[in-house]
Image 1 (cartoon, rainbow, N blue to C red):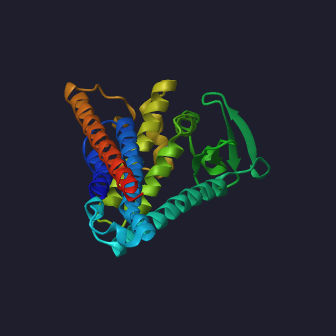
Image 2: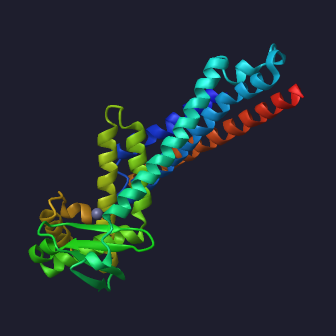
Image 3: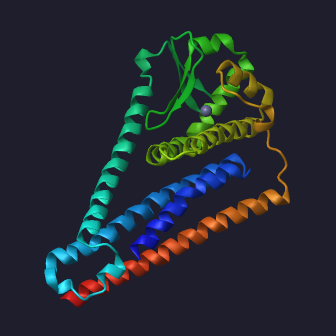
Amino acid sequence: MSLSIVAIGVLLLSLPALAARLTLGPATQVRLTCVSVTSGIATLGVGAVLAASPLVMWWRHGDEIQGMSVSQFSPGGPWAWAAAGILAALGSIWCLDSVRRTYNMRRQAALPRWAAASVERNTDADVEVRVADVATAIAFAVPGRDHHIVISRGLTEQLTPDALRAVLAHEGAHLRLRHDRHLLVLSTYSRFWGWLPGVASVVRAHRNAVERWADADAAHTYSLPAHDFVDAHTTLCQPARAADVGQPAKSADHWWRIAAVWSLLAFVLLLGGLTTMHAINEAGALLAALH
Ligand SMILES: [Zn+2]
């Protein structure tokens, strides 16, 4: 039972590879990936805890457990149950540490007001822009309570006013759409699953989709021309195509693909939910039988 839950978790964690291959549109691609990764990690955690739970019964009741269907619930024996428990504990510590490291990196990236060469207010995105006294072309958004956009002096010197407006609109879109949450899920996924061949390119495809999502949203919200974004990306040494920024007309086939892939995710989630409920009931019945 607990092994089926683990298998469903692995299935959820493999859906991002499918999402990266289908042309779904950047927002759908990233949202679908983040839902599958978050639920996949949670399902794996529940599976590991349930796989370890017979250990508690065995520990508490010793020989009384003999003859009961505990091994059907979680196969193996005390050693396998203990291994599942250790994996669940290490996995939780690892996940919390991964989130902590990401928050630390964000704090280090922030530019305090006192350290900025100048501080302005961007009226388009309604966000504070802090200029760093650096010659290299840099631009990024810092999320959180003191959210702001950091751009370098070098960037302001190299870009035309229109391309600079596109950069600020792009960074503002990252903040407004809370892309930091999506990037947190993607970096956790990359650290967790990154040792498998092919995962690095899947994560790269989804990170690019986050960038295309910000461009498309900014271009649409402020009616900015696509070539300003391409100019900005060229200065920032990030490859971009005008076709990626504009919103091409969506074919019926496109909507079918989106519906099919969301239905698949909903089906796997439902299967995972039902299997987990069943396993929890079984564990409860087993515990009740022991008393
Ligand atoms: Zn960006």
